[in-house]
Image 1 (cartoon, rainbow, N blue to C red):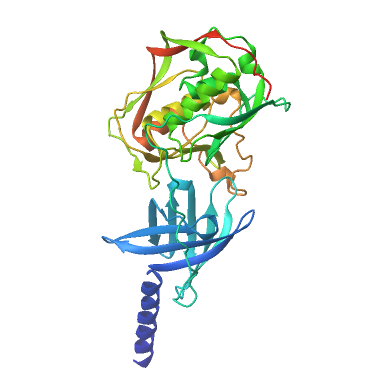
Image 2 (image 1 turned 90 degrees about the vertical axis):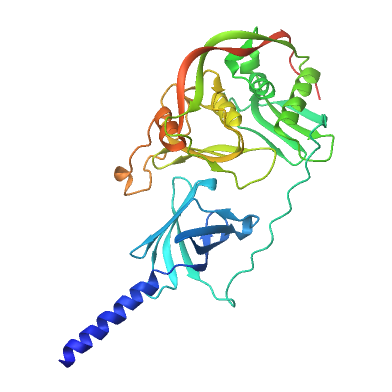
Length: 383
């Protein structure tokens, strides 16, 4: 009888420990050893019976990032942070004090051990920097100074077009790339163009002449002025019927997450992941989604017919084919996640991915689109 009682006490004690270990609410912190050490904090709470997680990367501005998904079962915790294309998977220790796991944000997972904090051990999370001052919506900025230099690398695709405060930068960009951005068209929509506009490549550094962050419309206008000034570009608009991709809402409705970032410009990019290529757009509209994809992935215009307003954080993972990215897609990881590469299922093609992951539909059809007809253009004037 004593042995039975002892066994029951042990069982109750074990079950109590397991129940305790499942409670992952609280603040967890650990250091991610990437190119540099990054202190990472997860604040986990319960909201209407579900886990709600906010992530902070202390050494990267400490901006609060809400996780998209969070689950715990039998001590296994999974957190998805779609806004930055990251995820964490870990195992809770028996005493409920640590979670040993991996952080994945690209083709190579990195180890990350999280420790439950106390008020004495918790790292201070600094206040995120205030949002930058924005230009008035009716402002008409220009570039006060711009240098344009030939890029001798021999690369045949643009390696970057970005802004940083008042600074605008292009690397290995062609005039065709710049026109596609400035006029919000696909290269095929540029008519009467000499061959060199897609062959000659340049590095551009320019600085805005007014104080404040420009929105997308203002930035495109500044680039148009730059092309008119330095390339003596003169154009007129026309309508041409051509094959295009049309983006619309799928049968089940959109599956979109409103953006956590407030600002006038989106952040966009691609990265290889074990199952294919991940496209990330933060703080983007449906028009910006269509613009980005027509300029990077597709060989024809992409038209937004969704009617969806607002800005969203978008994550799309797909397997590209030879017709996309001008036949030069981002290099896929040859071994995916290492030894388990053969178990990783390939992502769907872009059409299926858009429907399954975003709740949108992409179809190919002929439609009238804006065409930019070149009336005059010259190679850029010296600096």
